Every structure is written in C-alpha cells, then in structure tokens.
Amino acid sequence: MIDLLSGYAIFSLSTVLVFVALATLLHLQFGLAGIVNFGVVGFWGLGMYAFGILLLNFQLPYFVALILAVAIVALVAFVLGWVVLDLDSQAQLVATLAFAAVIADLVTTEKWLTKGVVGLGTVPHPFGGAQSALWLLLILLVLTVGVIVYARLLGRSPFGRLLAAIRDNEVLARNLGKDTSRAKLIFFTLTSAGMGLFGALSAPVRQFLTPDLLGPGVTFSVWIALIVGGKRWPLGGLLGVLLTIFVFDFLIETYLRVPSDWAQIIPILKLMLYGVTLVLVLLFRPFGLLGDRRQPTSHL
Image (cartoon, rainbow, N blue to C red; front, side):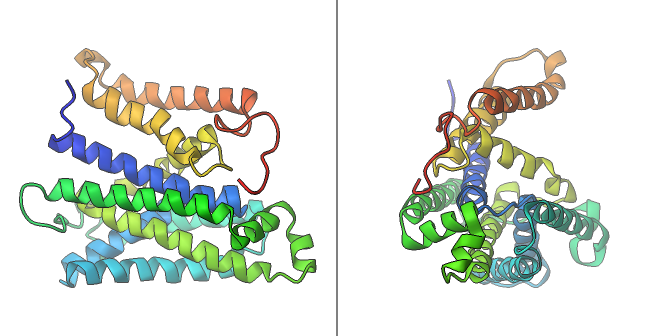
C-alpha cells in the first residue's frame, strides 16, 4: 500500500507538482505565444540557486530571499528576452539552450559563491516542525493549480488572443497596430519568473543543492511531457507529466517491487520509453493526446 505521507512520497509528489507547473508555464510560452524556450532548467536553476545563496550565504529572511530570487530571474529573463525574442524560433532555441548551459557552468565554476560540486548546503523548509515538508507540498499544490487556472483563463482573454495572434502570424498582428515585441517581452519575463519561483521552492524540496540538478534532462522532460499531453492545451502539461514523470519517478521507481539487478536498468528504460512515447504521439497524435489530427483553434 502506498503511504502518501511518507517522507519520500512527499518529496516525489512535490517534484511532480514542480514539473507540472514548469510544463504549464512552457505551454504558456510555446503553446500560446509561440516562444521557443529550451532554457527551462536555466530559469528554474537560477531561481533555486539564487534563493539558496541569498538564504545561506547572505542570511536573508526566508521570504525576502524568495522574492529577491524571483526578481533576479525576472531581470535576467527580461534582458535575454530583449535580445532574442524578435529573432526566429531557431535563434530562440539556441539562445535559451546556451543560457541554460551558462547557468549550469557558472554554478559549477564559481565556487566562491556556489561551492561548486561540493554543494551549496542544506536549504531548510520554510516552516518548522515534523509536517514542514507536507506544508510545502500543499503550497506547491496551490501554486500549481493557480498556474493551470491562470493558463485556462488567459487563453480566453484579450491578451491571450493577442499572444495567439502573435504565434500564428506576428507580421499581421504588428500591421494591425499591436506592439508584439512589448507583449512578448512582458509575457516571457513573467512566465520565466514563474519558473524561477518554482525553482526557488524546489530548493527546500531538494534541500542539498549541487550542480548536477541543473542538467538538460529537466528541460527535455518538461518538453516531452508538454508535447505528449498537448502543447496548445492548459491541461496538456499536467497530462504529460502524469504519464511520464509521475509514472516512472513516483510509481515505478518508488513503489514497484523490482529485482535489485534491475535497479540500474530502470532509468535507462525510462528514457527509452519516453522516446518511444514521444515518437508515437508525434506520428499518430501530432497535437498531443488532448488534441486531434487537426490544428486546434487559437482560443484554446
């Protein structure tokens, strides 16, 4: 029987919620606005490390460090967006991927600030007591549900329709008098700051911060989940994460009884099945499991 109140179960569920939030934020950027962001782990990791550094190295109060960490991510996203958002999608892909690589490299090399591969240190939970991890899980649940609700409401709002118009035909939207560059920059900054927020909240979930947390697998997992679920649908990220990360990282790796000889095969098998699932979805459901064979309408 699954004990949902065990320490590892709370950790796993918290991680799943973070990935659902990241996939939904990516839906907003890519599925709604057409912004290609392959630097998800960069914004997430910057928020996580900025929060840890402010909390542990500079001894700032917990929520002050959280707010400043999100502000730092927002500032970096604004500068990056100002440089790359008016370029084509391939340039955005390369630039955001390079940004994530730079963040991972800085975390490893700037030992005076991050302590490098030794690890930054243990980030405590925001609340004391034995139920602190459970309270953090509930906070992540509320925030993740809030992101999904926001995504659903935004798709039907005038600003959401503007973003969809930019995605489908930015030249036409610009010729109709819309300031597309400003809209994209504001939206990219806010959604990337949201990724930084969930990165900061991931710090007490992970507790001990090391550079290996900032590997490209985070970005790839989020992209795969979103494509599997459906990039144009607010619930696409949720469905994709449940069918990939939740099944493997929570159910199989945590609770499935497998022989010890198979323990090292499970992660490899996971990546293989991720790839097979992605290929099958692209072949038979190119708009995701929530979509159909036709192009979805822009009103979501």
